[in-house]
Length: 183
Image (tube, rainbow, N blue to C red; front, side, top):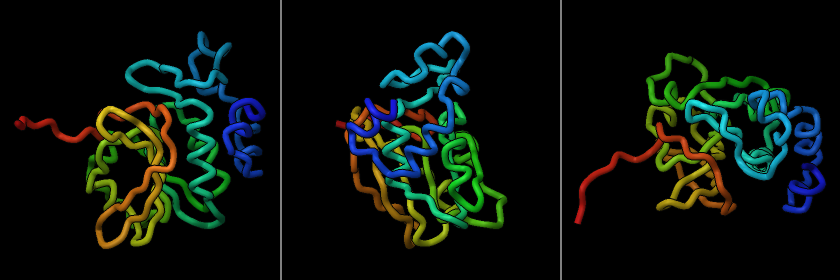
């Protein structure tokens, strides 16, 4: 995985290679999927949850470049794997489900880094309200029916995002935009 998927795709940051080498992916998939836990595509976990491809997590972690004592918030796509990668790299890590991200937070502290483990059509206001002004955001995104990875900042109660990779990312249905009728 490290030599054939990450390094060949430009994921070479020593901290990413070290974390992905230390966290066995087979511990985050059902028993029947352990034999192909390192495949270069997403693995279904059941109940609409997925473990994204190794390259997706490697690119996200490299772009996030988490550091030291910052407070991070992770919206988990269902596997727990990305939380395992991030936890030792930040001061604090709060992990929530996509459904919890839609609810108003009671937390007193706000995050400096938001990582969303899945593709979102839109970022809910309830989630953005959990961020400090200037917080960094790394997320899978959906534009039309195409997924990819984006990074950005939260400032003045808005998120500005820029796509940095076209890659298949499992969708988070909880973050789909409301469907409406139009001409």
